[in-house]
Amino acid sequence: MATQTAAQRREQARAEYDAFIKACPTNQLLDRISDKWVSLVVSALAAHPMRYSDLSRKIAGVSPKMLTQTLRTLERDGIVTRTVTPSVPVRVDYELTTLGSSLALLLTAVKDWAETNFDEVHKARERYDTDTPAA
Amino acid sequence: MATQTAAQRREQARAEYDAFIKACPTNQLLDRISDKWVSLVVSALAAHPMRYSDLSRKIAGVSPKMLTQTLRTLERDGIVTRTVTPSVPVRVDYELTTLGSSLALLLTAVKDWAETNFDEVHKARERYDTDTPAA
DNA sequence: CGGGATCCCGATAGATACTG
DNA sequence: CAGTATCTATCGGGATCCCG
Image (cartoon, rainbow over all chains, first blue to last red; front, side):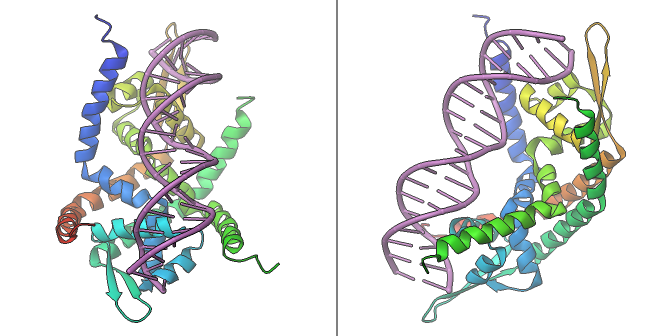
């Protein structure tokens, strides 16, 4: 039964590692930042507060489900505030918190880096694709 | 045929939006940054160049497949260089390029932001989870 | 040692339809 | 208007086997 080799050891390592990852603030927030919709929502709200339907229109391709889900997560994390006005047709406004604004700033930094280095990445890709004979 | 309503308009919007997203450097590179393994690999290599097996050990929970896949992508994007030494047991070294180093810097910025604001996020979460009655 | 190829499964995004 | 519920298709990612 010394068959407890690669596979099992791997699994254990992964378990420990997962715990480590979960505990690590960086990775927790990296998930937020990297989320496809989060960046778009935060960017949209960075300009000015918006209603649900405004966001829905502004972001275009998003399904109601994902939009709500994204907004809920952001609300939970204290990135946005959700304000319900119980008028005849209900009205819900979303806006960035201070924390949300700082996230927007970070996203701007990422955006800047991306725009600055995109050319280089693009060239690298072409070079790679060309050099790679057949794959 | 005015039945071209919600669904179809949505689809078209999504198509346009997808094109927009694809063309946007930010989102392309955001994908790279946000990848779970990319950040770890880049961080690991930021310290010093490493061999495949070193990375495999350092990152622990990664499967060979994902490690290779991640490294290939990074190589293609000009983030890392791959150096093969055809000795008896093959030896492959990976190291960051200049571009890769700048990415490492960006990741550091993200990490700093995460560590700075994690407390606040954490508190926000607790507040939210407490206030939310049943959900 | 450093991978490539293949199979498979669980997670999840998104479409659709319904509700307060 | 602002969601919620459900169902399905897709796909990332792990395990496994094998090659150079």
